[in-house]
Length: 491
Image (cartoon, rainbow, N blue to C red; front, side, top):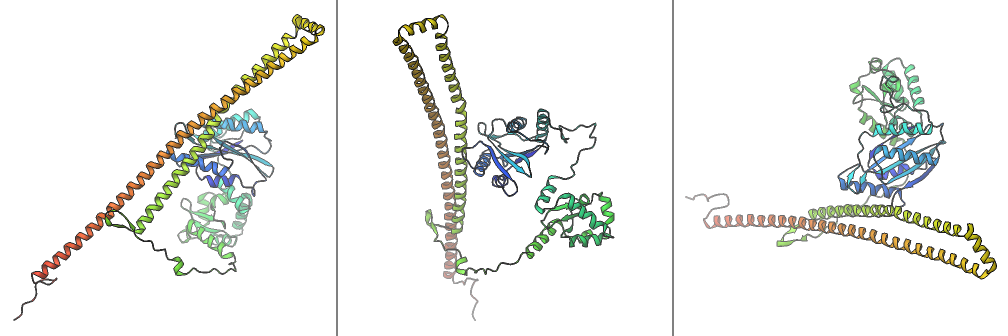
């Protein structure tokens, strides 16, 4: 059983990936701990909550992939999620579980929110690879699966003296998925092109004809850039050592090759050139449409005017900051409401268990009362006096009705109490949000005042400079001097 994953951001991209129906034959959301029934909105809320901790990766995404020989039951999937959650230290955190089925094989994705609302800190993700392998090892033992060797907790150093390396890494597998050519087929193609080439220059030409581009790597001598823009190691593709590749490509000037980024740009341009241009003629907008609308200067205190560009930039920044705070408030409110409801479920379940025990006890007491000598005497009395038996039966039914009515009142009272507690918590949270919004608006107002004061101060300074210049010119004229010095003498 292979478990891979780590902390990440990008909630929209992750939700889109998990819900892709074009690359998966089946997509099922098995679990979603959220107040909204939307995977994308849930991940966005979880990521937004992480901003309150100054964190950047508010999600922890992992996938559990068992061997194709084993079919997992729903109970085993649930156990796998629970074991991994405990190993990662994400107990009690909201999570989403999505099952994918592809080519007859099933695997699941789990996404946890890393933000702990009680402490407003991020759950640690250190040593997560060790946690993955510990969970994998426990699950293999529990389910009877054949162990998969690992690099960390599952590594047997006596049998694996060298650090294990995978034949195909995850990036190569993803590239094969995008191109539609398996890694084995691509490497067979590389081997065939090399066998048909007498030297490195011929091999370079053969690669270019096959749609690849040879480039110089940052850490390796030579890399390949595919038509899709993926960068591959030439030595890894040819299964040769770096020195052997260097000897074979000795007649190719590495310095004359493009860099990997330049080769990717060239491959992208080649792909775009291969796409036929659309027949639709685009209408170029007029210059008047492109010109920005003229905005009247905004009046500010002290008679100064704030530059329209500064005012527009201030308004845009304030709007973005306010929208970000509103998004954070909405996410925290939804998540808090969900957590409060989830915390109330054990209290309701405890009351249900208490009521069930009371009903079982009453049933047992009534059954015991009708059994033994007392039951025999009661049955004899009922036979002799049928009316008495009917009264006893009515009493027992009344006792049951009274118990059901009392239990319903207790449950209703508890639900009302819990709802009131939730409402109080949410009202406090909303009041805190309103206070934060007021504080933010106050900050905006102070900032606008500061800009206005700076603008007014600058305007007054310019007026003072202009007034000083006029006074100097007037004084020079009164003294009979020109603006550039005293007038010349005449004979």
